Image (cartoon, rainbow, N blue to C red):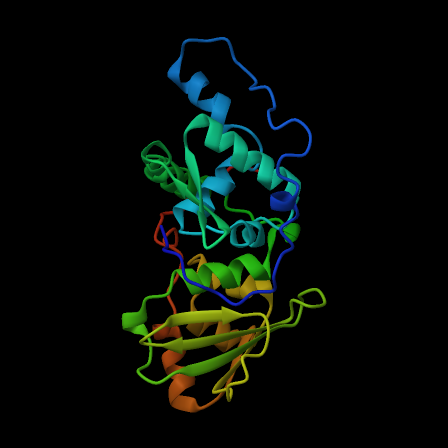
Length: 258
């Protein structure tokens, strides 16, 4: 899986953390009543959002707000509840660093890495259709940033402005500062650096490139993605950016319906 990278995103108010301790801190575990180890594991892992929270922890997100950014449809209160459940289950540890809560997986939680990787590969292979409401520019840019390989980046920093013509208000513009020393630093506010490359596209197009379902050259040829600016940098951009770790997964010829 991709490793974590610090990104400069808008701050999500940590409501869940501030509400810690209000009301009951425990919710009953839904038991299957079977000795089967699959059933016992599902009692912890099959709750809605739980695997996505573990996904973020596996990818190195250790702050409440960083996890919340990757699951924007999950309320902060529910996220706080899930983190408490995972702590009680022994999958997550909570520590204070300079007064700020940090979360990390225990060895039992880390052992879920190959499980989630296999689930992701299965999802790419069999659940190929992406529904319109599932395209998420924030998660896409976060994924691109944290999957970046500094060794692939230019020696001197290059700033890329990304414009999603179809994104909702406040999510149309993103910036990536690419450098050998920092990798890809992704921001949703202008970092104040001179722009080298302007990238104009739609969210589904860049998502398909990220997931390995569309090549840069094909998108450029059809005009669904446009690069303007410094020509050598525009030509080099596809080599600087990585694709998802799931991009190489072979697709099923008869995918499952959604």
